[in-house]
Length: 353
Image 1 (cartoon, rainbow, N blue to C red):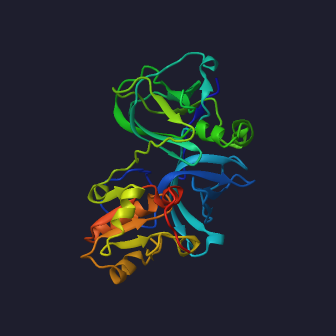
Image 2 (spheres, helix red, strand yellow):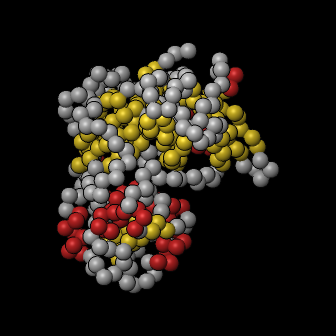
Image 3 (cartoon, rainbow, N blue to C red):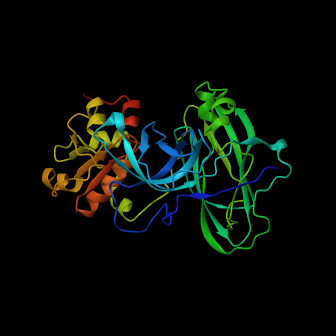
């Protein structure tokens, strides 16, 4: 069975996905994202799960990868030139390859191992099911994969895909905690899109299409076999990887509750996306202050009143969370639109251009 060692790329800095640091850098993002190489094996583009493509600013240390490939990664980067949608660029600070194998049928495994791990977070984005697991590490290599137990047809017409997390710790002893980043392709979403050849055509070109990927991690004492049950047409399991102190100080509201909230004239409604995104459609009455802009803090001080609550939103909810953290630090009472304007539109709410 082919073994691949999980490597960290471009590591001038220690990568930390969830920091307890109280300071939030508004222009630096850390997320699960695709990293694309050119024909020389140099990291060239970042492609987000929302379809946004960032051209990576050239620097030393971006080469040495497999040419013309896509890596599923956990990456720290800073978007720049956000005012030019046609030429978005990003500075890449650090990236780590995520464990992203295509789930396989049970009979393809020589042996089944389900050594326990602790799941810290699990959420769905783009064409992926993302997980952050906590494990115990000492000195042995551990195997991770996903077992496809097949799709069951439910009486209500929906379908359920059953996955088991494969984990072989090779009798390692418990040492210290370490995070494991897993991001297998979302098979339900692929089927729902009618992309039956998705795994055979597109994924065969991707570097995460590997039989096994290895990481130096080990077991925790919680869950032994984990089944992920989700529906093709409706699956909403979104526990965020990072729950910092600031997140506890603002409220994330559903679309319905957010709509009721902003009917209050005292609420300051802020769209924290780019000008280009705002012009394509926004919630009526919203003020545009781009959280990615280096002058975001100054614009907030100039345009918003601290004695009135602020309601923020973005495309999917990620950027607005960062904005909410910054606003909380400045003394604002903040509400965030969960799942962003995409969900707002999906639920038939009003937008204007």
